[in-house]
Image (cartoon, rainbow, N blue to C red):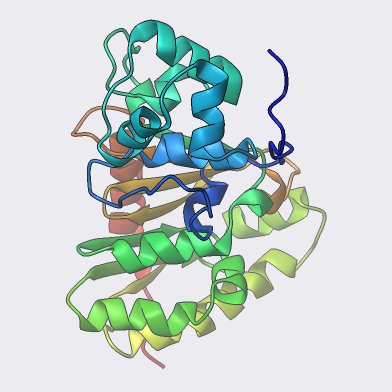
Length: 278
């Protein structure tokens, strides 16, 4: 098909990076109702297009594309295949509830090649939306305090508003933290980062003395939980967490990957030691 005049060039990135971008200047008006297909909208943006560009590509009316996004209406199977091909995103990501999607795929929201690709604005959006739970399991997760604006204060505000917040950080004196540091090529670097993280988290601890614990468990993944949104940062041997992939899941019940990750968090939290208020 001949290229449409004025079409945007494709931009790099991963599905989900556009979550925090400003709305497109497209003539298509897109609502923000709960039924909105945010995945489709994000994929369109990441492909460097607007909704009416996609309509042109797949031979649909622009108003129809608006409805696919704004109301979550499901396109016909053949059209879904065309859209997935144009956007280079699997159907199971764009329409996880569509008939024929394999079990397990519906809870996958996004995959980031490295944690560096996960925008701080996305974390801000998830944190702001959390109404019941905010859980963090990591050796230090200093990047949260360093890159997400006012992260310490905003987490403390969540506690004050009634949200259950649990920050489970690495015990700087544990063998697991020392080993992780050696694997990443440093002697005391990881332990020092754990101490700094505990200091940053003290802002939250002043609001809830029980919100912070330290663990000597071996962590194969770091975990961030904002209500039903679960981000899992893999720990590859010898590779800094920032250079390892992140998978974003949305829990859909007591089965699945997200539910398993949260059960793992609970086990680590139960065995972790409270941090003295100081």
